[in-house]
Amino acid sequence: MKPILVVSGPVATRSGYGSHTRDLVRSLINMDKFDIHVNSLPWGSCPMNALNPNDEDDKLIISKIMKDGNLPRQPEIHIQVSVPNEFTPMAKYNIGITAGIETTTPKPEWIEGLNKMNLNIVPSKFSKHVLINTVFDKMDEQTKKKVGEVRVNKPIEVLFEGADTNIFKKITKFSDEFDNEMKKIPEKFLFLYTGHWLQGKLGEDRKDTGMLVKTFLETFKNKPKQPALLMKTSGATFSVMDRNEIMKKIEDIKVTVSGNLPNIYFLHGDLTDDEMNEMYNHSKVKAHITLTHGEGFGRPLLEATLSEKPVIAPNWSGHVDFLNKNLSVLLPGTMVSVPKSGLSKDYRVDGAKWFTANYQYTSKVMLDVVKNYRKYSLNAKKLAMGNRGKFSLKAMTKLFGDILQKHLPKFEEVAQQVDLKLPKLKKVGDTKPKKIQLPKLKKV
Image 1 (spheres, rainbow, N blue to C red):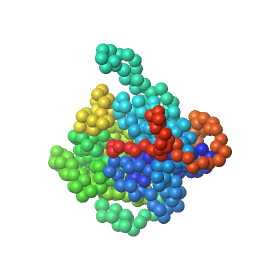
Image 2: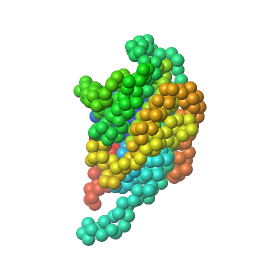
Image 3: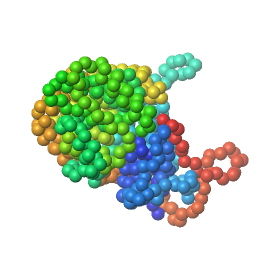
Image 4: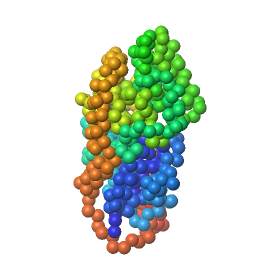
């Protein structure tokens, strides 16, 4: 009989964690080694409509979603996909999977959460390095003297987020609707930015979206032949209010730059993966660019590389795992303290730093990519070829299986499945049986 494996995570949500959870469940299904049950959880205010009941792959996931919290016995394995401070062990063997960290220092609660699990999995070498090298002093509450240290004492493995190469690939045919919209753009050379425009003053939002806009405007103002910047971005939601706020941010930056400015096109709303791939591949989109201060992995950048277009990104954090320094454009910069406006207090740690790209260098790079595009395009094709094999969903499933094979213990054979509701720990004398309760995540 197969071991019971419960996956707790935001499997139905339109979020980065949701996409990651769905891919992990698909990998586990393909392994065909476990009796899989999915504990579907919310993720903040993200819509929970990402699973299509008419899609064959999604139908498999939907069939594994638990209708209640009952299990025939205590699960052998629990995999929780979340931020580490939410990790909750409930099985004989517990695995925490987190998207990682975007700064140099996690919160102490993250270290405590990682240490609750038997094994932890992160998507990049950068995330692993930060987590295993973080040490906090443990202080006595009364004497205020150091009595020890708090550090990760459980194993951490790196498992990249695989790209679905059946969707993200080079294409030359586009839907009429999308093609007609792109025909409205007169420019033949577009830099494409894909990512959130998060909280923070100019230069202080985590993706550094504001300074990307300003750097682009300063670089190409008054030029006789100007490229354009296409932005697929949003704040926290896809609401009209959110859209208007993004448009205001762009206009506020434009008034700080004088001269004949290049055009910026703004796309707001929820696109399917196929629609995103169309955008990546359109002939007018020539290069992908981000000035992000830090990424745990940077999945959209990986997917963008498969369009065989040049990628311009900072030379720091999770995405450097798949952005070969010889085949992509990695920007130099400096480490700076994370500003208070850049992260909410739930994620902010005193002394934490992140990366700020050199804007002057970025400007020179953008000019050179336009001028010498063929050179960059050839390298991009080579990068896509390598990433297609190394960072696919198939390759991720293989590595995931190897990690589980390495760490999972041998579970005692269950001769017969019994419909048993295991009790929680209880006070002596409390003999009333209780259902196993799966963890519920708080909003993040």
